[in-house]
Figure 1 (cartoon, rainbow, N blue to C red):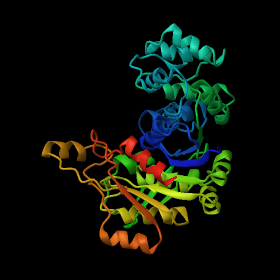
Figure 2: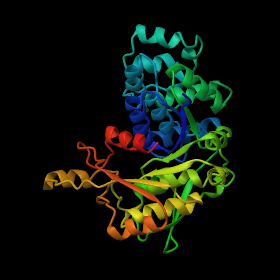
Figure 3: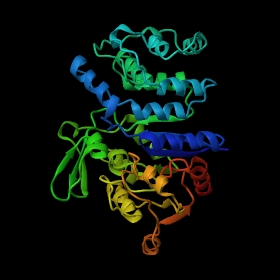
Figure 4: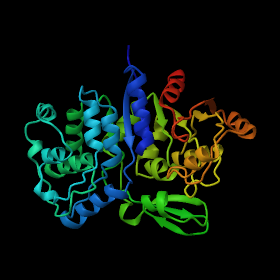
Length: 378
C-alpha cells in the first residue's frame, strides 16, 4: 500500500512532540516530511550562532529545533542513548577549539560501545574540531555536534543534515524551512516594533497586540530550502503543529516561497490548535483568532481544525504551576465557543474537538490523544 504523504510545519518542542507521537503510535504508516522553523535566536542556540558570526564570519542556521526533530524520528537501536546525549548540557569549562566531536560525548560519559556505534556510520567525523575560542560550558552536545559537522562539511547545511539523517537513522525527512538568516520582528498595533524571536516570545513587555510579523532588514532575502517546495507539492496533508503562534508557526510562512507553495498545493490543511494562549505573544486571543491569524499568513483556508475540549478542575497550586510555565506565562485554556463553531461551519472548516490535554504539564498535547485524533482524520 502506498503511504500517505504528510508534511508537518512548525518548530520547537511541539513539532518534535508531534513527530514523537507519529513514531510511537502510527506504526510507520505515513511518509513524513517535517519543515522546521529557523528563526530561533535565543539561549545557547543564539549564543552559538553569535560566536560563529563574531569569530568565523559565518552564519550558523540554528540547530536546536532540527536537533529535537531528528532524534524523535530516529529508528536506531541506540535511539534512547542518542536522545540522551544530544540533549545533555555540558558542565565542563573547556575551550571549544580544543575538543573533537568524540570528546564532546566523552564529557557527558559516553562509552566505547556508543563510540563504535557512531564509527559504524562514518569513520571521520568524530575527529572534527570547531575553531571557536569560547567555552563549551552550558552548550548542548547535539547543538555543538551539528555546528561542528556544518563547519567541517564545507559549511554546507545540506551535507550536515544528510549525515545526521544517516547517523540517527531518521525515519522521516527533516527539512529546515531556510538556511539563510531568518531573524523576525513583530509590529504591534500601537506601532512599537519588537525584534528577534527570543524577545518576541520570552522577553518583551507587551503594550499592545501583535499586528504583523516580518523578516528583519538583514533577512529580507531569506528563501525556502530547496526541499521545501517539493515536499509540499507532493503532500496529501499539511499539518500545522501547535506552538508559539508567531515565533514558531507564522515565522515559517514569511519565508520567501513557502506561502506560494502552500497556496498551490493540493494537500488538505490540518491545524492542531493550541490548548492555551500565552501572555504577551497571544494574550487575549481566542481559538478563532488563532485560526484567522494562520489563514491570513497562510494565504488560504484551512480544511480541518483540531482543538481541545477538556476542562480540567485544577487546584490552586496546580493552576499556579500551569500558568507560571514559560509557554503559558499567565495565559489560560482555550475552548471553542458556540459562536466560533457557527463561524467555522459557515466557512466550511471542519472542527474536531477531543480531550487533548497532557495531565502532567496541563498545557501540552497528550501524544496518544493527538495522534489518535489525527489518524481518524487522515
